[in-house]
Image (cartoon, each protein chain N blue to C red):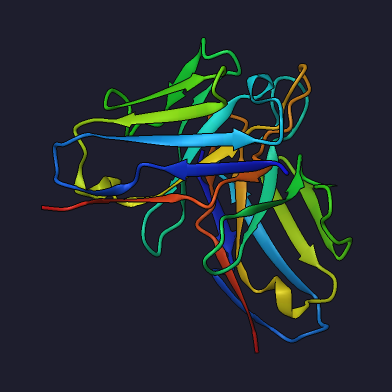
Length: 110
Length: 123
């Protein structure tokens, strides 16, 4: 399964919203009824950290300005008001069939 | 404190072998499936291998199948990755990661990541 993220780079203004799209080459709905699409954030020099799992569930400690949505093959990560600590690369990831990642979207402040 | 600490990376010539280790602490290691994920320089993330909580089932990505072996020692809270027949394209930061799915409730992602260990394959 191939995941394609857009845009690949996103200059954003502090306090403004941002969104990232992730499109899958196949439906991510598993036979168990769940959709295994998650979002991770990687700051420079750090390992990735989990933000969102199963499309829209925020992981423990993740601020509520982060939200995930979507279904089937099209998914979106939204940041309601970008803060300085949100810079870095965002990856979508699927776990319906093995595990694969999108190519990443770099978020930077204008 | 939940923690994963990788070790064993280094510089190795093509065709040689290397063994990575990952020491887990702060949680019941034997309850969780564990993975290795790698990231080539200035590149994205690539899943490498997974091993079930009890070590009975392991699966590999196509690019490492037949060359890498994942294993664990639950008595020592340690995960391993034996890498044989290394290629230049195996050069990457290797992360040990935890799969938080337990008791039949699947999460479908990775919640704890180590800081990574660097493997460089070069002649």
